[in-house]
Length: 445
Ligand SMILES: O=C(O)C1=C[C@@H](OP(=O)(O)O)[C@@H](O)[C@H](O)C1
Ligand SMILES: C=C(OP(=O)(O)O)C(=O)O
Image (cartoon, rainbow, N blue to C red):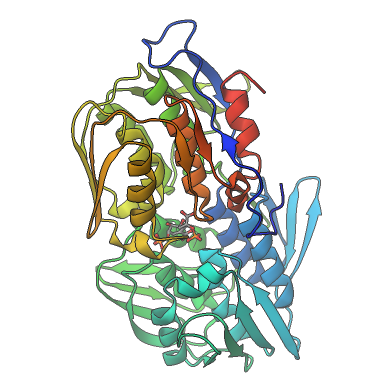
């Protein structure tokens, strides 16, 4: 499966049905242990912080996927180096250098939002562009804030404040105080905070509007601290003083958002799935899935594996309660959660996720269209979806170049024979091995 070709539509994939679905958990039901790859959000933050450090960092157990490769490609263009070793990826920090550079964004929000500040810190003239979809995703509040902090950002041929654009590095950024509306994406705030230790005066961000995806901000602050920075947050103000970053070694946690469809499987189909390496403490938004499982009628408990590592054991019986869920803090889980709720025995509602219209695709429109096309009773609201019980049937599930729609299609297929998931290769944004792992979970590897 190519991780470099966003347009590759390839053959569709008939999502497999579960062995015994729906069913009470018994010995013929789904029973599997699953290992998911490293967190995209942690991997790409670790790479950025390592590139800003004063010495080499070994990033252990990183994600290897299209978004992670795009981040490494961007950092190399900006003067860092990345070497794959037996233990992980060793990053050597950014070096000064002049001339022109080109950063390929693909459709990676983390690359588009986290790397322009790094370009402003260097001395290259860096052009940024990516897939057609990234040109439509929100960016302009971040580029505006970077300009106010002293960056030289020039709009390109498209919409102002959108790729393609150019950053002319002048060897540093003054930094200072700035107002930021980060309501369209928490990544704007994370981007400023991650680069701030390298600004002459650090940064003080005064937030306008509500920031979604709060756990991703906690992740940014936590990782900054591990690399030696001292961020402080007081309500709507976040301050990061200048700091020298260094960390020899960083181990990436498994991606709990990538784990979402595997957590959903036993609830939707009946059975037990264990997720290996689920951390007892984490800033990842996917950790919220543990409480979701309980709320929808399943069970999620920690176990200790034979090797001493933690596993999360998720059990369900194929019956799900309908619920109203505000997903503002965990928006990236919406596609899989919406697929689960199509099997609930009562009405459900998802709210708080208007910003999903600026994700890989307009996820609210895509989910309403695709779930309805399979027989679902799903309507879009301004900030979410209303989902009522309805029998689903076979059909094509279009994925709009969105990895999480492939995962949602897989969940639907557990109980609905004949769900044809279009362009499954697009899941390579975060989990190139997803289709194989899904078949392995179902016992058909
Ligand atoms: O900082 C991050 O790593 C992310 C933040 C979130 O972005 P939004 O706040 O734009 O939803 C999330 O949805 C995305 O998958 C990853
Ligand atoms: C919104 C997502 O990705 P990105 O990092 O491209 O914003 C996502 O993975 O759900």
